[in-house]
Length: 79
View 1: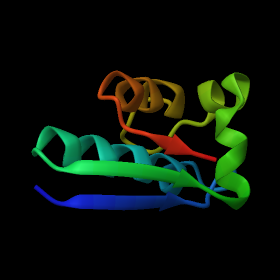
View 2: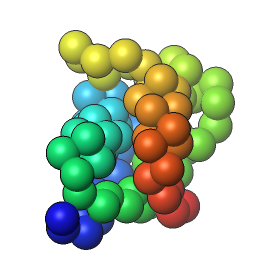
View 3: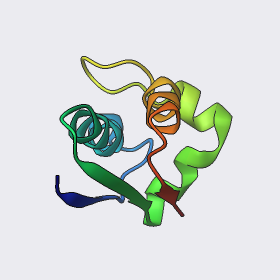
């Protein structure tokens, strides 16, 4: 098991990159690793519920749902 840090610096301006940090961390957790998420820059804005709900990556659910999965997996999110 590896400890992995995922840094998200994108927000509503690039919703696919904004969601990538959560998709990656969730996949790592499901593969048995120990991921941690750090949000910086525009990524911090994703902590706003309205912004997260309206940030929809291409091919994935809204960031709010991706973040809910991260939280249910007990993945730490640092802002």
